[in-house]
Length: 292
Image (cartoon, rainbow, N blue to C red):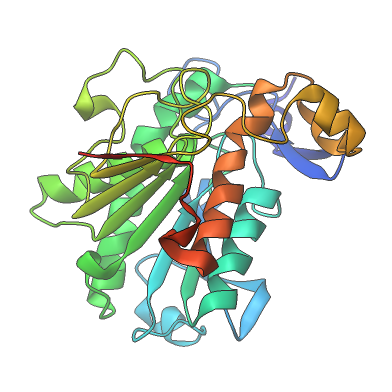
């Protein structure tokens, strides 16, 4: 297979969910596609003025940033999706719509689908460190545009949560503190043997909060942040996610996409965050909360 063909990102739908796939991974291995930031990492801006049609923010180009709907006075939220996801998928659109429905935000969805394309999970894990370094540079670019890093909130799901942690670490090495990281079920496979330098952890931002919806399987069981939330409480199967319930509720898209039930409640992390945004902490009855 020609390199150009192997390095083409392909998308297909399983049920209603778009999945990203490549014939070769992006990375440093002998058979990997070379990294190309202009192609591999795209910062997509959504605001209340453009809630569904994104505008591209070009890192380092302040003149082009001024031509977008980016508002320096509005809070900035950066979202990193998980393994094999597309930015049109449910985690990105759910989180985006939740924020824009609650107020004026600069919601930046990081399209790093080439770096986390299936089925190359090991390469995707390695790319979370790379993504963290690149996102740290992007946040410093926003700082030059008048947005202090201490005001930026990075939200990440699964591998995205780990990349968020590496972003905070990269900034901290330069004497800069990121404002907040929210980790939605940070990925466990590929990270469970690492110390705090090798995964999302307390200290990666001024405040780190973590939601654990699939502890011990695809998500971290241990508390990682300043505050950790365990819905239902800390069960690795969330309510409504047992196979018989999915069949009863005709959740065919989930069943077809994952086959295995454990992946479904891993994705309950972003659904829970969606519920928390407008409701606040009044919805935490029955959850276990660990304060670090």
